[in-house]
Length: 447
Image 1 (cartoon, one colour):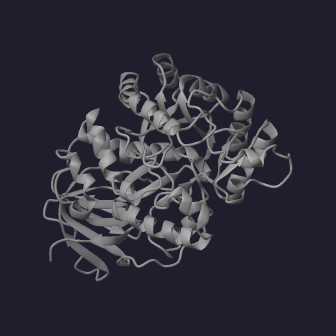
Image 2 (tube, helix red, strand yellow):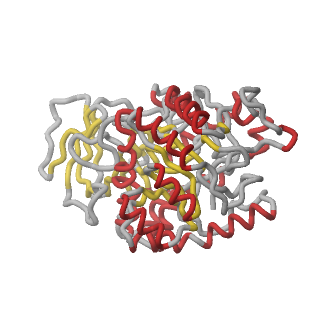
Image 3 (cartoon, rainbow, N blue to C red):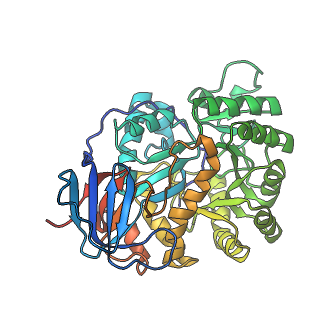
């Protein structure tokens, strides 16, 4: 299971070209004879034909689409395989998936960025065509991906996590104290991973700095975290006034704030301040779940089911992780009971081996949801949450669905994931075509 977000961070710079699959740059692609999972329903379409032109789905038809007079169209004979939207991970840390904490502290920034670029390609090859980055300055890597310097998913960046002194994301040592207001930034702040803010004015400043750099949403740590050394799980961190300052600054830019919060106290304070999305929530009670449902607050949570990410943690951190894991069944039961708007994410950190389980974590939702319910959550539902960014949305258009006019982020699956959700856990074998923005990055169809 991934460690809770916010452990270490690194500055992102445009990554150099990694050895990677070059996208096939046909101006148009025709998928013939596909069964469509559209990202919304619980059944497949009848045999259909899907024409992609540029970066959008131009036409869907059960009748053949004649492209004989269009030499720029690549025709793909799908033979009744399933076409579905690209997957979306709503809690990802672009710069912190592969390196260990020690590597982040001791490596040069160039190496860290190259490593992140390679992982971005791997993320895309797992079928995740969009991620919402919730900690770390992924702005420049996003730019490199968007300009086709390196392959990778669409990134909705938050920039630096904003925390308080001793909060989740404050990794200073006692020797760094006392903090001098207006003095030198701590190392984690210099790297652009988290910013320490201890008053409404400081919060407002740090939020505006992230928005200036291109943040599509803002993240604060509203409560304690697993891996932070001075941050017990039970604590509430920001005051309501401080949270309100962040919400006001974000709303002035037409976007929203999400908070890292496990406990009912941290969640309720966030809601009172106007926060739109709660990250994690594993230790909430029933009263808080009802409040979230009544207020229409989003829950972005993760199916943490084991202690596989505990390696390298100290005894105190392992105990906190175990406490979070015990809340996983409860959080999904409450989300279903009160019909809370629920998004899927993974929060995978510090392990290339764990990153390969990104699809397996999605498949694990079958413990609480039908395969269709899990896939809808990871496609159209997640895309609905992304729309909260308003005009700060870096990718205007319809994501997470297969319909005419939608952005062409598509997977061709060898098998029916509505019957066997475990297909998404083995993308190397089962995702035969991966398309993002109308470009094919993988084509493993038998010749």
